[in-house]
Length: 458
Image (cartoon, rainbow, N blue to C red; front, side, top):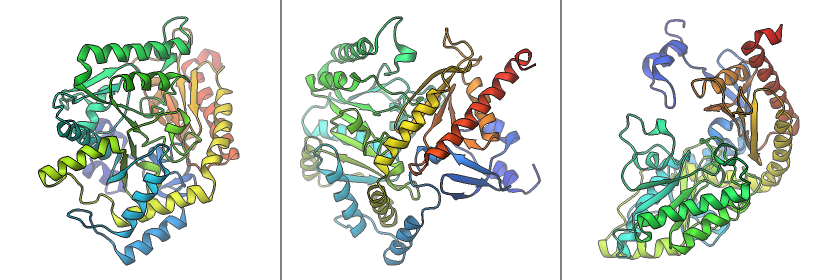
């Protein structure tokens, strides 16, 4: 690295999230300078298709002038205000109404934070607060799934089911229960159908609840489609079977829509795609196309009526964030939702998503591809070196990082989650651009195969 270059100064002064800090000192960063539509351009002028929409989140691409204009208008009118102690402002009120009324099931109110992690953390606190309000102090345990991702605060990282979010952090905290993931390809028994697998997962959940005591279990958190755990798409009947168990034991359902919400699965919400009827929905990422940080949770009367009564008894609901419902972020979120609706991006995501899924499935015969999975405009390609054993290089994640490096060199930014490559492009991507992504992925797979099998290449 050139001394005092942006790369060198980044290494000197910046601690990166989700990065090997030791390796970063040698490798340095890829410095992104600007964005245009679905592309980002690095400091050297190289263009990349951002096939992850940043972090599953830039729904409208990287240069939407209507969002810039919305932020500018609000910045000029009211650049900041809060919602503590009976205060409010127009964008927050409008956005709360919009989210509650557009929810796929009846909801009562919205609460705002700055990230999905904070919103999931808030959901946990509200659930505990509610149990105390109902005189059920033992009903506090929360069930989550292996490989789930719900955030990185102390509480939400405890919900997350990925080991590197726990190691050396002294996590998870107590009261978090785990049940199996809905990944049939990885976790199904030999010869087990998807239907039988879904039944088994529901039966395992019920056994867990009974073993712990239903009077101690408050809620179940789940992503409609798992994101950072590998884009895990549930079997068709999975969510119906899981919800039947939760209803039987009066357990709240929290749908983490941080990735799935606002068109990603080809419906406005992932809950609609899978027939989920949540008590709480957690929203972020595409809510503002990630142009500004904002998150929300919306909850129903079943959740909030006891909370409201308890706040009256105590004298306050003692929780909130300085930037929660920030007027500029709220204005950008309102404009984002308007554009998604006006431009028909949910229906478009269903159409282009079908094209993405079909094109990626065309790679299934490649010797390095074990599984292709996805729905709408979210997908993953699971990489293997042994298709029959469903195994890759040792250690796990090595093959994913290797192919992902090839793909980035070829001008497409993906994300390796273990040995799966994720694809979650902006909702504005075209079919021709999807074809370009898949062609570059195919070339990258061939390059990787030839490097791993030099005799074959010769």
